[in-house]
Image (cartoon, rainbow, N blue to C red; front, side, top):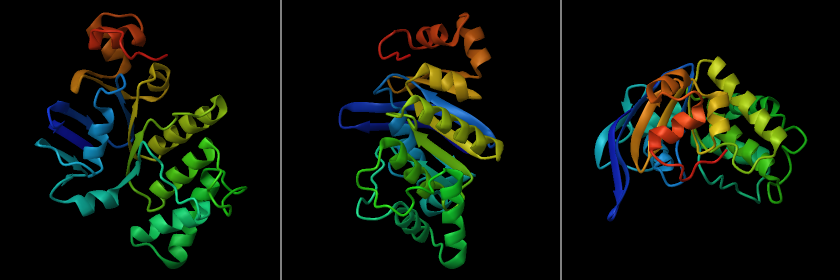
Length: 244
């Protein structure tokens, strides 16, 4: 389970997030929905210990992201907004490197690597250097290395960005599978279709603050709108940044 409580983070005079709070339970998909620049990525970076909040607290399975960062890192798998593969390594070597960073080794590590390769259908390119990979192939490698240590909490920053239709469908199915395995999944998006297709709970973020939250039905009911798109626009008070 992931919890954010009154998070505040600024960069100089720019406030990135202000009083952001939400809970993301296990066995559920929680979506952070908002326009570009709303504060979604900053929130995720606090959750996966890259940034320290100036105020507020975040925890993963009860461990504080600031005071117990190593324990949090063992419990999360993070897909950042930049995949950052080592292009002179093969896909398998990229995954192995991250597994070793998490303290895995030997036969157990190799079994986990092979499991991820099969799960993400990477057999055809697992032993090729990642330089020149397509966006979809790069994404699969990034996800495999994030999951190689079998974390219970998954953080995904716009996981379908740049994918074609078939790859997007496959990614959605994969995210649902993670939820069905009982994992806590949090992902960010500015694409309404993405969120409506996947999320059990939606946290609408606008201008660094939580504008609304709840299940899709709850958002429609509290905003008095018949569909989720109109509910989103009503919640943020503007159509700026809305992407269908």
